[in-house]
Length: 184
Image (cartoon, rainbow, N blue to C red; front, side, top):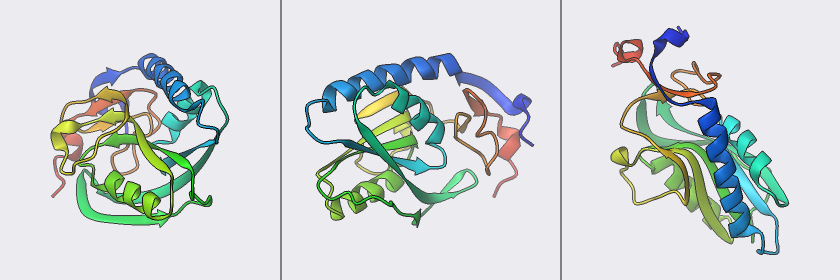
């Protein structure tokens, strides 16, 4: 079931997200505009795609982007097993990388991706995330650019899902507990 009545509360509206993406885009432009080389945004599939779409409209400089598909979740639980399902098509050697993430939760997945990109020769790796959930962090990793800090609740919408549902909601909401309460 993916009905909108499965949402306990809306945390951030579509307008809130667009406004914050604009602010982040302006800050990223300011931080990278004099680097002398294109910035490569690496979006982590699938959840970050709507955020990437908003963000690239707001970055006022030459950028490139590519995608990685990395997974560590089954339902609402992190498995701790980080798998790279699709790697980049672009070489990162010598490039400044900005990882685009939907949510930084435990930090294990993003930490592994950062390590991988540095091993491949990236000049620098920074992180922009739509949502940050520091209360669940289990690794020593932090985003350089944060859209919103969220409480320890299961959030969906604007790319984020529960078992591939709710991704297309235009806002970010908290999923009602009963939607996933039977999960073991």
